[in-house]
Length: 126
Image (tube, rainbow, N blue to C red; front, side, top):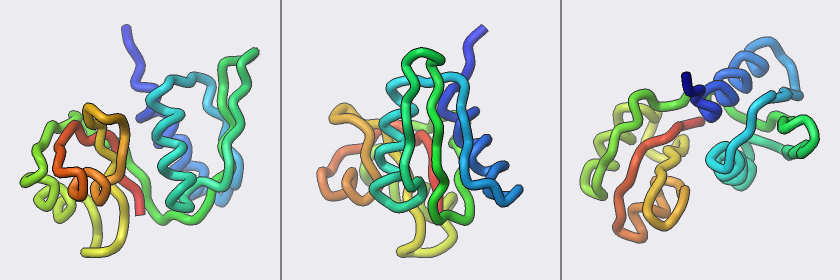
């Protein structure tokens, strides 16, 4: 039985934000989760995060976001389809970020459009 570590952590973050908590501790970590947290930190949705190698956990200090959700199933899209998924998941034109897993690593939808590559949708937040 496999777990979706990224979806679990993002759901924990969303529930903590709704409960007015500022810190979340995720018990499982993965390289994909760390890359998602890096993007969220760059965009201001996460203030900081600390990885604990002993416990194999990560402590996340939440920043400013209204909603964050994993995308299940993880749709694959080419660069022409990114606009369709932006309209589907994000509330407005210049509001929010789609996280896309590409062959050049994880990046935001804006970076993927600039590079001209598609990938697999992982999560979104705004």
